[in-house]
Amino acid sequence: MMESLLRHMVELTGQRDHNLLDVAVISALQETVGASQVRMMDIFWVSNQAMMRPRALITNNTVSAVHDSTTGRRGDTPLTHYPILLDCIEHQGSRVEETGPDGETILWIPIWQNDVATACLQITGIARVAPATLNVMEGILSVYRNYQNLLDYSERDSLTGLLNRRTFDEKFSRMANFQNVRDSHLAPGIERRHPNDVEGHWLAVVDIDHFKRVNDQFGHLYGDEVLILVANLLRSSFRTQDLVFRFGGEEFVVLLRSVSLTDATSAFERLRTNIEDHYFPQLGTITVSIGFVSISASTPVVILGHADQALYYGKSHGRNQVCFYDELVRRGQLHSEVNNDHAEFFFDS
Image 1 (cartoon, helix red, strand yellow):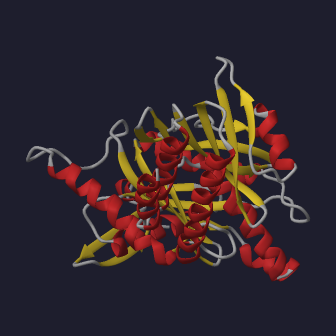
Image 2: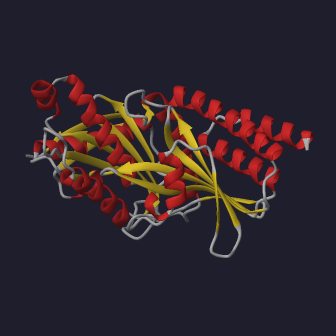
Image 3: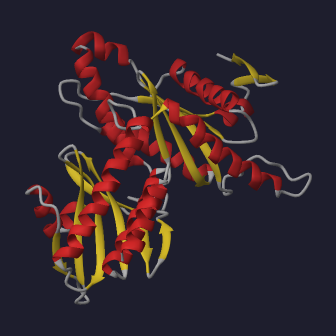
């Protein structure tokens, strides 16, 4: 067992990516306790309600990332559906066992970050766990939490907990490279634009409307609270495999993976509506403007520039709306000329 444990520790500490770190820890735990299934679940809050969302899964030694639907709640489940886990979290517990519907033993382990349960593990199909094995599990989880904190410190915005701008280039490059490889397999002469029913990757820039007024009227501390609330709504409005960044100030960027134009538009409209419908203490309501573009064979500068221009077109034409760059160009409402990664933009009023 010691050899196996050392191997898993090497795998854990060798990761530079949160998803791979999740896979490493659930693999280690499954082998340690002989479970049939281990799930990593996100825990987050929406309108004062705790929710859970699948993040990674290993079943009978087969690991998979969880891909949720782009419609509805995308696999989100209220934490109240798991009362024994909810009670454990409310009492700051480290773990709790229950018997599942098929008579199997389920072990729940909350993952704590700064006294907040940000995730949990669901370990299914185990025999009674010996105290010595529990101690080994605690050791594995301690290494996982420490290493997760190190990754978070370098990748996360300190205020909102979203990914930071410094992390954007690497994440964007991975997504763009995948898209370029996919496009390269198209036969010559086939148009590379995204029809409504063809899946692609998308980048959106999200900006809070009239945010300066919030800071001027209520002060920067309350402005920070608004940013945190908006970040929570952003986090809960998208799937686990999508990426949300804070770029600075009141501007956010979303990388949306593998959906059609129709579904991308719906996802961004859902975000806009979620924020418009949310009640912000003292302030009441706020809105956001969103500009988005498909991720194609171009540089981050050009693609971000296109999304920015769609955003500011929306802000200059009423705000509180979602604008798709290609559609604005097609309608003649926005013209662009791109040459060697330098873009010039022209608006039609």
